[in-house]
Amino acid sequence: MQLIDGKAISAQIKQEIAQEVEKIVAAGGKRPHLAAILVGHDGGSESYVAHKVKACEQCGFKSSLLRFDEDITEDALIAEIEKLNNDNDVDGFIVQLPLPRHINEERVVEAVDYRKDVDGFHPINVGRLSIGLPCFVSATPAGIIELLRRYNIDTRGKHCVVLGRSNIVGKPIASLMMQKSNPGNSTVTVCHSATPNIKEICRTADIIIAAMGNPGFVTADMVKEGAVVIDVGTTRVPSAESKNGWKLTGDVCFDEVAPHCSYITPVPGGVGPMTIVSLMRNTLLAGKKAIFNF
Image: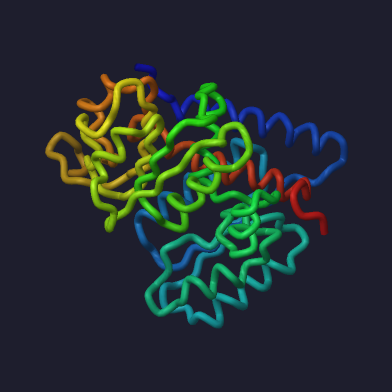
């Protein structure tokens, strides 16, 4: 069994990005600029945005954080998004989710200029992904693909079972795994809450990508010998062993599943670090106008 070290890979990629940025700036080019909109004071969102700002510093990017109170109206938020759409100094930006309940997230996502949508959530980017055209790929699926690539994990012709059908992870990673590419070229089965016989299906998988948000769902009896297991789950569960009273737990029962795997990601330290670094890669692409020229 080999552990997939997302923390080490993400650090390596940040260094690669920083070196490229310095070359761009030294040649008289523009330093990439990522902006983030944060509404309200959700603890998880605050922490996540702080990590993104720190990653921008490590990559040599310019970053901006726009904070708004939780009672901001939907129209006022859309107006702020339009300002960023029209700001030529901002190469890409994100609207941190979730948003307060009175705001329609779909409308907000669609308001972002798809050419600056480094989160990869806009329907145009999602549509282009589905048919294999260049686009901004949402960060977590992009991070998974990069881990498979950097560990030289063979995916061609393999049976990949994706657990979960979310728009952010399940659907896009399923699409990526079936693309004519490397990694890719897999036969993909997507399982979800309405799928019967999930255990039996998982036992046929060469690769399992667990993204259900269901702690400990994948157990040893669901994994065949030599399978690759990618755990996307990051759920806070109570823990008497932790000072803050909780710990991050994945969708996979790591201790019992790991001995059966050829490769497995830990939680934390697996897919998580790759999510933010994938956002940085999208920002670099946006700054270089490498996908959409305008």
